[in-house]
Length: 398
Ligand SMILES: *Cc1c(COP(=O)(O)O)cnc(C)c1O
Image 1 (spheres, rainbow, N blue to C red):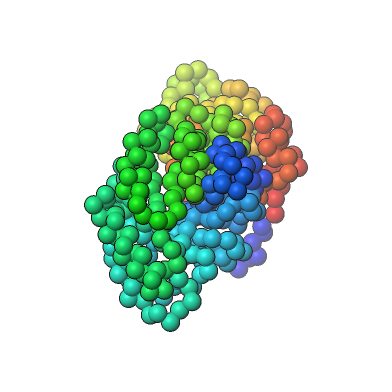
Image 2: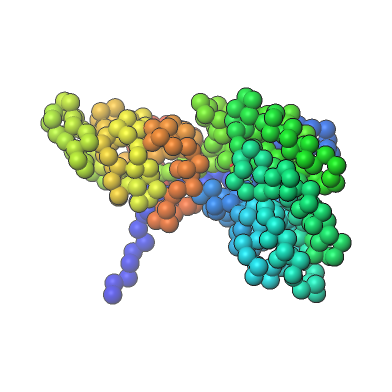
């Protein structure tokens, strides 16, 4: 057995908590509201903070009013990471046994089907942790929740749980199917408001797209639930995060591992998906779909080499991909590669791969380590430089 030397990561995601804090401020500004009456914000950190790593984003979320996650395990992880405030669990209870795990203060469960109410009712009453309940209206998304006919009866059953001490309070939640569209929420909101009109409780609506596109609607609720925009990605097609005043929190870095000069007519990569038109210099980047880079990325997908914009050529393979070094003729093995980040919008990469930013951000695999951004990294990554020797180089970390 030989002692392994610490080696630099092939691919590294850097996360800037300062960008998260900035974005939270931007979202508050969007929804406005009178002091003391502005909506509160459930900062959505499901899927390990959209792939950014909970521990890396929490320092940027000190001003959030609550955190929203998918399941109880994620809620427990938030507490373990030091979050003391309210926690909202979108998935509510997964099964009857989970009532035994409701040992968190200030826990809020989304209730989206009747069995979840049965499980709470069957719970041993000798307990101190009664969750608040948010009834989910099926709405126009219609994937889960109570429809218009089921809602009031479910609300009555939930209120009965409050009377018995099984729950603390009952509130209302809706999630729009088409908030990115100009006409995407008016109708859906009107239906929701009619259903809850005579029922007491706070109201939560509005993901990132609703905040970006329907600020008045969002501002008129008690709690909003942004996710994607907090990380600096645009929830609206045709915009980048920066175009909306947001700061991308993640940058994905790799390195050039080899360069080659190839003659005209050379086919590159699996199935010869790209054939060089003239003589050209190509570089190999040590990143592939097993890292979470999208395999669907086409020739032409943008990438920065030493801060200079160029393109992917041919098919992305499992561990590497080829890039055109035409615009960066002096790039050498070791050169810095930026796959997305403040200087290269993830939305552009997503579009070139036929998908959306959230898919890429949450899709990094366990093979990619995540580290905090280094100071001035954003500035560094946007300038052309001989990255291999830079103090801010990806590989300069231990
Ligand atoms: C994921 C999620 C959100 C956040 O959505 P974004 O589009 O990322 O802002 C809000 N509400 C619910 C119910 C969700 O599942």
